[in-house]
Image 1 (cartoon, rainbow, N blue to C red):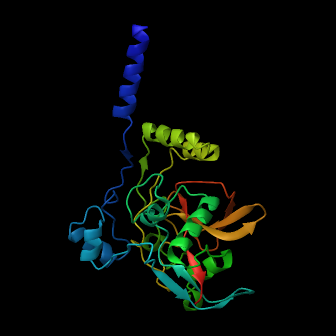
Image 2: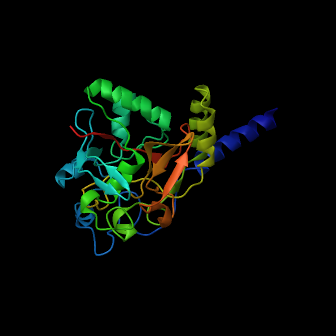
Image 3: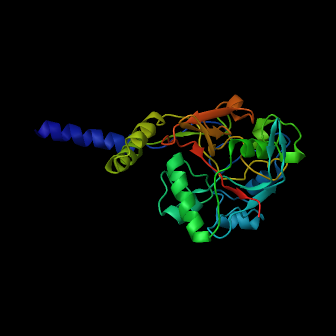
Length: 294
């Protein structure tokens, strides 16, 4: 019995001491040190020069880049109507940034895998997003919703200001998107995985338990919203960072767009569509808001 107890203690020590975060070495691309891309993004270069390590509120305000979302102040861009192939898209509003963890927490009270208020929310299935939107609308007396598949693509292409780019905002993916090759990375510690799986199991969310386990070794990580270049309409991260739910159904599934931080560049092209079950969750799957033109 004593030997069994000793083995259990040693195993616990290994898990808690030896299984911490492991950085995937990529010089100049660690958390808090976003590299300048191409000829150099002046915003990011200035951020590094000012010594802003954690992209916190003070740093953003000092650089004139306050991307904070609050329940009463969600930055939106008006997209004038136009044609998308054979489809006519009416004018609508879409959020400047992907829904952040801060906004999600303000509405829902909790946020899985929380890192910072200005990171995109992930680990949210389509059904949970609908609950979030209902609560947000009740708090704001507005009619937020998810964009349709056609609205999402039209906005990602730049609407009637489109330059025909491959990715949303440009043809050089490193300038406009966080994806597998530039998003850095870490392995989530095993005790963190077990903790989140136990929380989901207590709530009887078995699909979430399975998804947390299946994503345990993925490379890459999300980054604060709005830290790459915007597209022609001033919308950020429509390629990369996190995939985005849309309201469009494909059979029993829902269409997702945009690609994520753990994907190859080809999946971040504007033209790429994918579908997932409404109860599917992943760390690299979030959403952005839309609402009808006033």
